[in-house]
Image 1 (cartoon, rainbow, N blue to C red):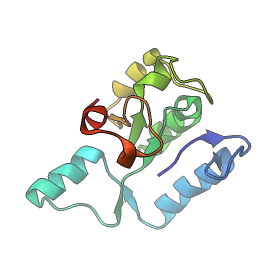
Image 2: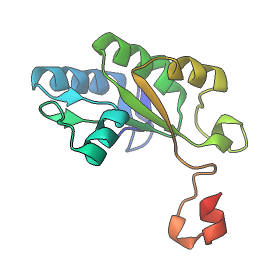
Image 3: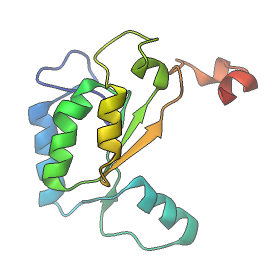
Image 4: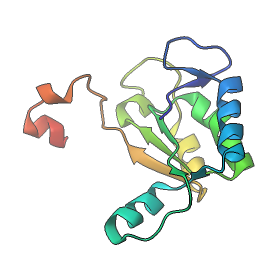
Length: 137
């Protein structure tokens, strides 16, 4: 589970480009097999076998680094990945760190290696404090 991938870390959960590339090389070297979210769901629903040492590569929050850095690298390594975005950020309603655009998401979604997933609308800090109606939204 990754968040932002940057040339230089800004906060503790960031990963540098160099670190991320090292992770991809370690995946390859150690015979770990990135699988798609669809493969995992199919396995959980039907018991269909997974390859040896399966992992799901996930990227949260829709940072621009997902398009500029991660997307080219997963294509290079031919690794599937899941990008979980929250729509208020993409629409500019929540301002913060760098953000993907709808056009970039559409380009990525057209690639069979990519799954775009929901990470909510607003990315609330504490889901346990929301009403059922707010959770449904």
